[in-house]
Picture (cartoon, rainbow, N blue to C red):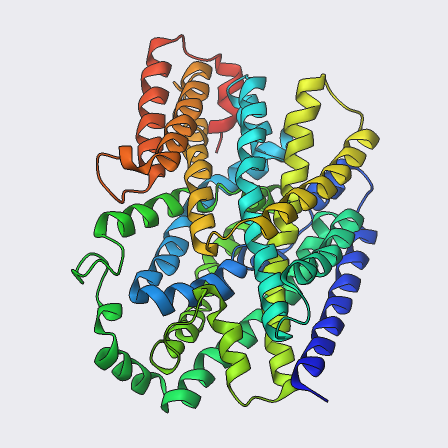
Length: 488
């Protein structure tokens, strides 16, 4: 039997197991919106750990990470840098958000900000921002699934069919089980990803060079510029220092502001469980080390691979590996795609209905709200699939663009818990201006005063400025609304 057939059978079996693992947990929670969106606030440390980890390390990590290591060298270390820094705010904000959620019934971060600043407009604006940022993030996951199956079968399964079949499975268990299905599939997928990543990260350098040290010695001889810090190579092949530093800053600012991560604060069974998860979380970053080694393994052995995001599946097709092993590795890559895609899809639909449609329409009863969330899950899947097959943007490029908008949520979120003087006008104005400025420099990077600077930096500067000035120019908020956010 040919390699691709065996590997495809393994991937198909994995999809079937994931489907079952995603449907069964949904039977344990209530049929309410709180059960569908926040798992009745019942997630323990283990599930939270893998939900936070696996929902971030996705196609972007398994395909985009190696692709950047392959094409840009040590500039890819920005992925590890922002992950370690970005989780810190959740240690302080997450438990407080959970407390407010339990007290007032919040299940999204927009509900929290809308209550703190007494503004329905903030809630609707954040719904629009979140859904808009989620679409390219979901496209990344679909692209990863399509790319791995297309490469694995040498084109026998098209890119579009591969993405469509994989996300049909995701769609079924997200519709069925909501966040509990997401949580338990993420646990399964997270364990699987770790095993596959460490195996490949150590095996490929050994197979091609005789070891990790020998691999980097070969890169030093053939492509030394890839081992130089961004901005120092001097040949234009890597990021500038401004581009590297600002990308780390914006990505760290937006990391836990992604709604599908922040919303897990509401799902935690206790504040202690949430804090413990955050403290443990940086260990998940270690998993990125072998991921980047995969990309470095192809630099000297297989130069000129395009697109660079395909370097992992390309290496699998070039090396004499067991068909069963190839299948397991490809299944692990699908796990990376699905473990983020399901969480993104669920959060985007929940936010779009609960914070957008429900607020604009004057409210929905529990049954209709859950129904509309499910309908939006299907709609967003179709929209993301359309862009998946219609855009050629790189996986990392798509994610960096999305981070600029999401990072704008951090200033009002910090102000909600740290500055009693912050007002509705300041928060709403800062968020609106920050989004507008970020979008302007995203569309017109040539207008940036510092070439290469991430557009999100300019958005954050404008955001904070308007937040502070607007708050100081308006009357302080009522103490009875603010005080619950500052109780110990």
